[in-house]
Length: 255
Image (cartoon, rainbow, N blue to C red; front, side, top):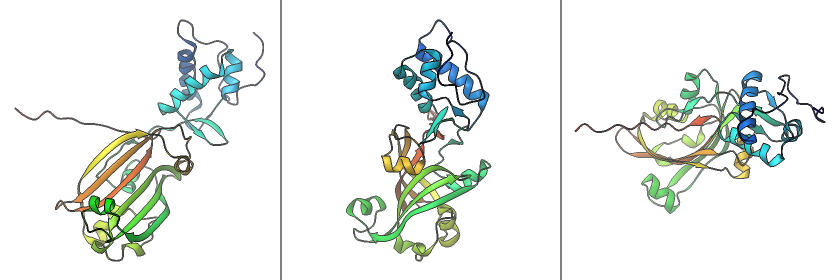
């Protein structure tokens, strides 16, 4: 068999041939899953060109297999650097637990980069979601959430500023939103009404999250209320699809 023009850029060797009896796309998928297990999280996967030349495949077929692995969370792309083996997903999204508390429970260090934190008049849409009068002051807070320094989620929320005097003066770079509300204003999360959808991020959001624009995210659109049932937060969050999964628990009511 001729030697490939471009050698794989990983220490783990590729097999000379694809597994027989299945389509090339499925066979390459299996090979890359095995390769990912050998080199571990953060390992660099050979480029599509290398894979195509090594196995004598069309680039479109290679791209199909790699894209499926990106969608399944086995791999992730870093712009300008290549395709890598993804770390194990931290778990499911818990809408009633703060991001900081959730990450600490998983043994990770939570962090945040504040993109926007300013008070502005509530639009009619925002006012309706927060159940306040249009034009009322609201804090618009946008943060990129990280775990061990790695981007995990993009949060964009609004809260009624009049209910939380001084909230706009806080530095939200190293604070848990829910923990701060409980500590400073005695507000505890009682529940939320949420909608979850798989979406493709905007190019600018994908850059912030350090993912490829074709990497799906879990978009959570939520209205959160306290233990008395009063709404205190409305917003959206984009969670990296290669790091999170949605878990649905259903219970049949007793007859």
